[in-house]
Image (cartoon, rainbow, N blue to C red; front, side, top):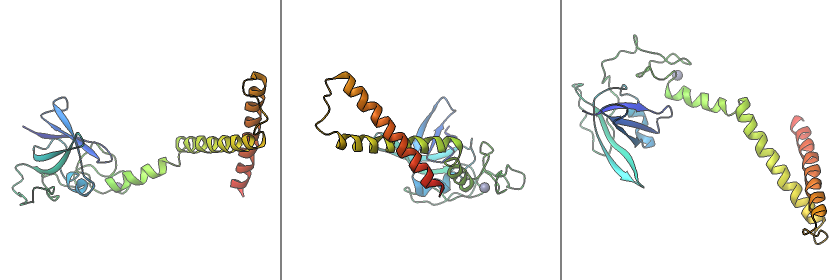
Length: 186
Ligand SMILES: [Zn+2]
């Protein structure tokens, strides 16, 4: 008895099996995401998959016993129907837009979860990542500048010279970063 056990929040893959521990991951092709989100978690399903680069890719899925069997081609996932009998009015709703959700394990609908992800990129965590990229870029630039400036003049076998060089790179990088930040503010 196969059930749609779990769908990851971005709908890139799902688990199908008799229960969570006895299930397998299936990749969901982009064009089929909208169909699978119409099936409520825990629904009994009929499905087909193919192996692609060692991963199982879902080519067909249908909730069983809905009385609305879609004569879908085997390469497409059946269209969303009110397959589960759940009505949107009594079911869970999206926290952001209020649209009915088929699955109460999600807080938002697919569209709103994408919007949230975008916002996350601007969150403090996302900014830290951005900062790290900027710092790396400045260190790279500083290394290039210092490298060009001292080409052929530094004996790397000499520890004090190597240390001085490293310190010099840091000083230049720090100055570049400060300059960069003041440009960003303008
Ligand atoms: Zn929404």
